Length: 300
Image (cartoon, rainbow, N blue to C red; front, side):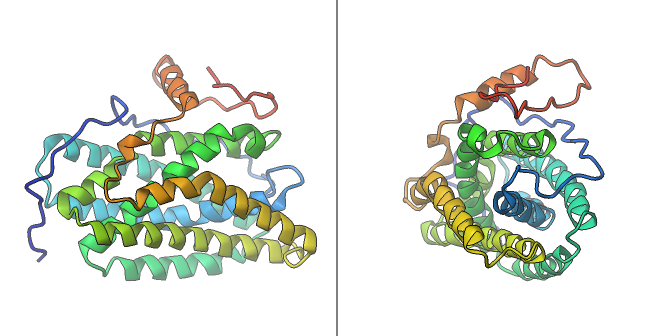
């Protein structure tokens, strides 16, 4: 039995959003969808596909670590956030799992080998202490904050002309990540709050997921027989530099002792999307972003 971990000095602070909305996170991916869904850019397509491949293993792990943390938390507002966090993450990984099945069915069954490794990796991680698990989760979510800004603020350069289902799927995922950006951090602070494990968790959670995603990308590029081509290597380097420039500052700030994700303001486009979604009638599907529009405005 785990010892009580509740931190008596922990004090709940309001989130940047009024509530964590539980949406019908469902996108009608065509059965014959092309895994190279960014035109003439297999590197970016497979990089994001690689990240998608991790989600049905990462996000259930996040959910289970949060469920363990709930036993040590008494604050009613944080408990509500934890429950909503888990429901959002559950919707995410189920949708990613459907998409990943299409990737394998449409030309990349080799990705199953990567998935087997992910199953084993997260099973080992669940044997770690709750502090380590929550530090990993908080670290990953702090890195995700950089992806939120990257995917939303750079949506035209990343997704312009790309498949609207996959692009909208990723952008909406990031919006909901932004809504619950404080929850994994709050769970860690309520249960531990120690600086060094959280510091290590930024590296552990971030680089573990990025590494798995890059491995899956390389498997797909190898299947395409272009992995070692100079053009491909240049494009990989370009994507890595872009990711470091856009996400790196968020990871650096997460390493600081006084870090709190509440200090990272949400993109205005995200705020406008949330307001627009609130005007939809009950039961309405999440609208797709127009990737052929040069500004890719909110779809409301």
